[in-house]
Amino acid sequence: MGGENVSLVFKLYCLTVMTLVAATYTVVLRYTRTASSVEDLYFSTTAVCITEVIKLILSTGMLARESGSPKRLLDTIKEHILCNPSGLLKLSIPSVVYAVQNNMAFLALSNLDAAVYQVTYQLKIPCTALCMVFMLGRTLSKRQWFSVCMLGLGVALVQLKTANAAKVQVEQKPLLGLMAVIIAVLCSGFAGVYFEKVLKSSDTSLWVRNIQMYISGIAITFIGVLANDGEKVMEKGFFFGYTPGVCFVVFLASVGGLYTSVVVKYTDNIMKGFSAAAAIVLSTVASVVLFGLHITATFVSGASLVCLSIYLYGLPKQDTSTISREAADKGSKQNLIAV
Ligand code: NCC
Image (tube, rainbow, N blue to C red; front, side, top):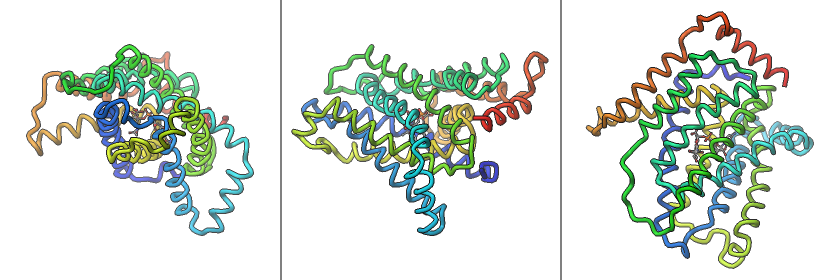
């Protein structure tokens, strides 16, 4: 699969871009949902749908690059996409779940401050670990469970900022926002691990898997547009309310999604959580050194928890009740191959 062959620098680069894009995405999305009045607001379902289209186009471009020649590209598309309904069906499961998750992110950020969203969204770290255990047969020792929960708390503290006092033009329903975050957390854990399982169970290219997922993603999110905003979209147009800020949100969602897939290919979903946390801490420390950013006591305690959790998670297992890390990794690999 070649996952082992890429350099550490490339992995770090992908993780850093993914993390920076995710942080920017949340803030800009929140801004676009609250800066204009309800009458001028764009339809969030169309933004989710158009993101799937862009990701499909970009993934096809990447597959063309990987294939090397137009003939090989066409052969791959024919074999894995046009003549492979079962492959499409398999990937339609995470695409439905991601469609729900991506729509929930818009709903949550229409009703919650970006900082509150980012803090509560960290529940996805233990949730993803649970999915890894149940769906991939991964074994975590008690200490690793403890470190995963500590990581979630640490990232939440690191991202905690004073409540945003900015005036918003749209009515806020915090309870609805929180429910949307919980659904997004569950979807993120399940879909992330499912995609990883399918990706690593064969040698099929990442870009083929992405194309398979985005094809059903377009269909499902388009149904979402029709079901939720059908009449209004007919009346005002698909791209109604698209300001440069909204286009930026769609751009970030597309780039962020593709980088997420690359990160999952070369690491795994738990590593994604740990590395993203490290990237947040390191980028803040870099801002302190480079730009003299002022850090708070909350940040220092959160960053300490993140560092401690990374250290604890990586320690070799000592108790005999749990299998060694190598054996666990081997076990999960065999599990993946068995899929
Ligand atoms: O929650 P998270 O990711 O796991 O969501 C995964 C996002 O990546 C897209 N995806 C996934 C796999 C794949 N093969 N292709 C994809 O396009 C999914 O559609 C989904 O949007 C994270 O780990 O925190 C992360 O968070 C998201 C985002 O910030 C949250 O979902 C909040 O809404 C980041 N996405 C963006 O920045 C656009 C992601 O990079 C990291």
